[in-house]
Amino acid sequence: MKAAPVSFARDGPLRVFVADEDSARRATLSEIIVRAGHELVSSKGDADVVFSATTGSRSQYQMVANGGEDSERSGVLDLDARIDQIDAALRAVAAGLVVRMPQVAEIGFRAIDEVDTDELMTPRELDVLNAIGEGLTNKAIARRLEISLHTVKFHIESIFRKLGVRTRTAAIAKASRLHRTQTLEL
Image 1 (cartoon, rainbow, N blue to C red):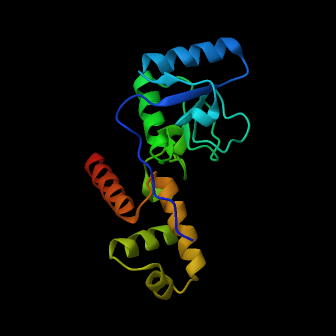
Image 2 (image 1 turned 120 degrees about the vertical axis):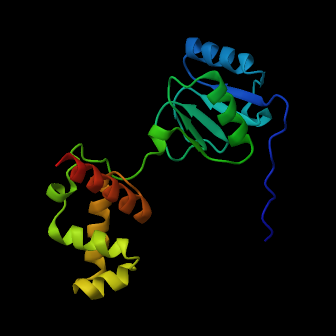
Image 3 (image 1 turned 45 degrees about the horizontal axis):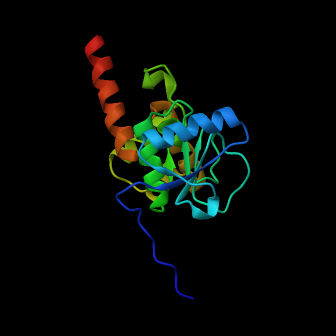
């Protein structure tokens, strides 16, 4: 079976259906859509994209929800999204892309507020961090430290969380920067 080609949104106004049970909220959303330069349609079937105040019920249509954290929707915005953000999200979703605001998209570990990595990290985590700095793979780190691959991954996740980073390179850079700062403060 051949996959359907991706269709990209046109440059002009989009046809947008506003879905909301509350008539006052629907009127507000409709006004936003018109101010963004798009055309309101009265049927989901006629729309390029559906816009709603919340995630609401599941839909087979490309939908941008203004609020919520539903990963089932093509687009999810903050409730206080600006008109230009709404316009960009509508266009992106109509083009087949997925849209998330940074706060909604944030996946991972929250950084600990403290900055003293020597006190925060266990000796084994420091060993793993040093091995990462040498460019070793997880498997090589496990062999060197005589621990399981699973344990290496656990330590790396813990290091990332403590440093507030998402990549090995960022972990080394931040640890180095923190180390220089702490050394200068002595």
